[in-house]
Length: 525
Image 1 (spheres, one colour):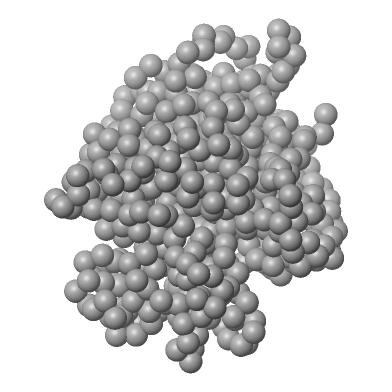
Image 2: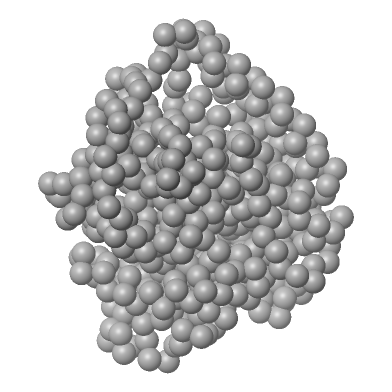
């Protein structure tokens, strides 16, 4: 057993920003299941939405967020995040993040446009913003004497006990698997932050890295946290369609800078679906592409930015241009083949405006959390913004609390389990899960398909419970266990929603409901 004041599960922007803000005052452990840069934040291309220039307003950004979220976004949370944007950008610049400059703006930063925004307000570092942010913060985290980094450590379950004063559960730490040593460690800590990102690997096609298996959401749910709006899975409209691409994202900013969506015959189809055409919110663009692919029986559509010329493309999108070129696609001369893919989990663990969950001492930040910001559909580039603002909110709340003294927690007991000789079951179940979630719980849904998915999930859960009870844990088993738990939450929330709103579209309930309400799953007591 080891102990810290605070354990942060996850090493994306939410986790690293929290670690750097807390470390001057507390002993912090950052636990990440692979290496530090392997999370989704590192993959973020477009940038961070924030009001930093004189022509823009908070009210406009708030309204854009509410419209994209189909008016399910919490207005107080939305205002908090939008108004905290400039401070978050200043903090990143102070850390050393080198954003792309533009001397013609009042902020001195180059601002780009993305779908759903009324103004240019996307601060970016070329077309690899996430990498620039992650690289800078990782360097600072590694150098900080009060931060311990545990790479290749996978979260298993929280350690909790009943707090007699509040009658709520109190977080006491977390069990983690050291993958290198094949050893489970008990980490004692009165404060745990879940910042593990989303659950894109629930689906067969995703823009997310392999680490996005919904770990934090599942761990919080099993410990007793309520979860909301898991049906709202954002499918990014433009994932590169190529057998060697491995879910390479073509950023929203390509359309913001004039990219056009075309059918194989060259027809520009987005004006047929929405007056905003390519700049419509992601849910509309993704559904439009899905409808056109099914209507014409094609495997992909095409995103054409070639009319901007080679110099423009290489300056604004150097990483995309080079990656496409490696695959034999010259974006300056031909359109890029694209398809929708699961991209962002808008729901998650319910939190307060301070990032606190239903369990004392347990916080959730970033894509793991349901703060109320994203509503039924996340506005482009609001994700990294949310990480910044809520890392600040959680830090303030944590440091305002009196530090608790904890009893020694129990070590992990694996005296009654053995090594598995049936690893093929995990691989088979993982593949089956992702395929039926894509087919039954995808961009367009029906009640019958959701019910079919629910039945398959029940069988999978029974198999995994039996497997988990009898064999030593592995990273693959833990990830599958979490993916099935998150998939069940997605289906349960989807079955609750008797309307089509934002990212959830049901052919059985195609109309928008009169009142915008959250769907919530309460834990079993």
